[in-house]
Image (cartoon, rainbow, N blue to C red; front, side, top):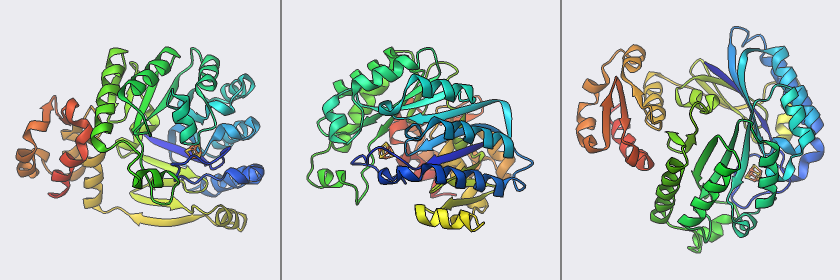
Length: 371
Ligand code: SF4
């Protein structure tokens, strides 16, 4: 399985926690940017001619902020340069404040069959506080346009003044609005973002409070019929994100656009985060790769363990043996003893028990120390 990611680095304004490559003041470059993305695809065409891609994910930034005709041209360009499987999952990220029925109709006409909407919170004061351009009403309008379609809603944990009841309310709103998938992420506070000051001032919920929100959220999601399939991802039966499953199974993927990452043939590489540099490279006929790292066998094993144990399915013991020529249970016998109360082995899969998934990092580290 392999996936394609395309990064659209434009937004209406910058959220206070945002550390992504997104340039709210550069929307006027959207047309030139998209022309560069199509060109970057053409440059990669021969290298990837033997791949069949099962997913295309258009993320950002806010892809829905640019004219929908560029998105339609983008999907067409992917189809022109690469083999996309006939039943490919094609997702677009949308900000509720930037959609219309016309946009969604053109997205669908061009082949997009999955939508991801950044709800974050159903409490308007919290949305305003983090600088989101939408409010709850915008989300509900957007969800109305997506009624009956396959869509995800993102929910954030750890916002200023957020309570467990707020999280439960947000999840209920998303579920009642028809979301088939909910991603529930803890706010990640990065140095240099405006929200970092709130963090330094002790105004954000601490880790115990965030853990309580996660527990409240998972309880509400289970009650509403959502199954957890990865630590932060929950869905109705059959609505898993195939694109993300490919990441967690160490599948290959190619990224296009500024800051996009790729992993092909055990080489990981990332494009520049600098928009001007991206333009200069592509317009002069060069790829815009900034970092490149070959992953050796040890690195592959570390990644395989780390990614597999994030999922509810867990680590496929047979697949591990096939890939690394060793029996996982033998090799990691000492680490397994240390975390014995937190894990279980069933039907050939080793997994972290559901109730400990939120603290998976401290469990996974025991295996990583023994690779
Ligand atoms: S919408 Fe997303 S990418 Fe854009 S500024 Fe906000 S967090 Fe960043």
